[in-house]
Length: 164
Image (cartoon, rainbow, N blue to C red; front, side):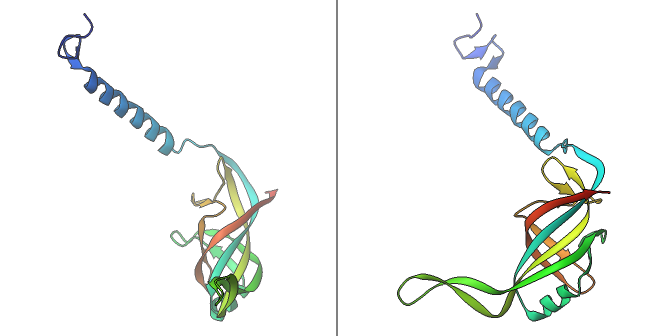
């Protein structure tokens, strides 16, 4: 008999215990597969242009960004690329007017900068990777660190512009 009257399989292990063991095995396999880093990364370096949107900054930060220069990794100090262009707009936020309508309102003395950076990256399955394994993905926070400024923005676009 496969199941006895106590609900044990072959008289040794209960069916509930077996279900729990199988669930743990499936979860462990899924976690190992997800976090194994088995994604393929190209060995070739590709030149990439990406735009980072930096919001609600003061004129001081804009002035520092406009000096352009080399962007480095905030932790390792490794070279990421170089700022090639900056577009500045007045910062805005959505507010409610007296009639209850939502309207865009300018924030006094605050700006939004769209910073274009060009650099060398390796192409991965889900995005681009720097030499020291920092990922570059659309809609993710990105730390811009130069000789003149350190600020955080959100990656708006990524464009491959050539292979080296």
